[in-house]
Length: 198
Image (tube, rainbow, N blue to C red):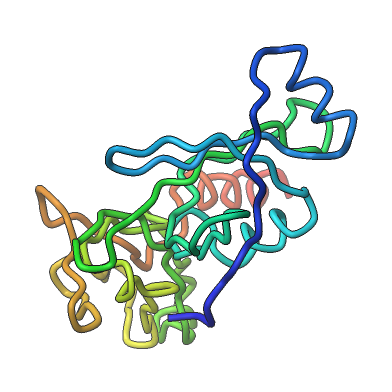
């Protein structure tokens, strides 16, 4: 778990394309906070939003301080960026109940140098994130995989991974997450062709 991420937002009354353009001109990002039985139109300054998203992504809790109301735990459900500018055009926050499990995708991080790397093996990451279910306060920042013991041809499957306490991996089949693969046949053929040309 990372340190608590908080973000202050303001309620907004305006809707429609013209109003959204005006908000963008003022340097504000329109958005929505929604939870069971609640839908609140909001606006937020882009700099703190960018900082919060850099830390939280779409899988970590953000505590929203909605002006005039209480602080509410949420996930950044969707963040829309302009197609060719750096600005954020819209953001959706999904309110969560801290006592009820949620499903999120958590990023994977590999550590260590595979022992098969000395034989030319290349580390292949087949999944950059895993779908998990847990209480919002138990969401891990990442799933760390130690790849030090991998030889060429070895892989780590989803069932090989020890999840943090309270976290359950979601999957239908026992897929490989990372593996150490041999140099590709194409690369070997290319080397052979080069030798033949000499």
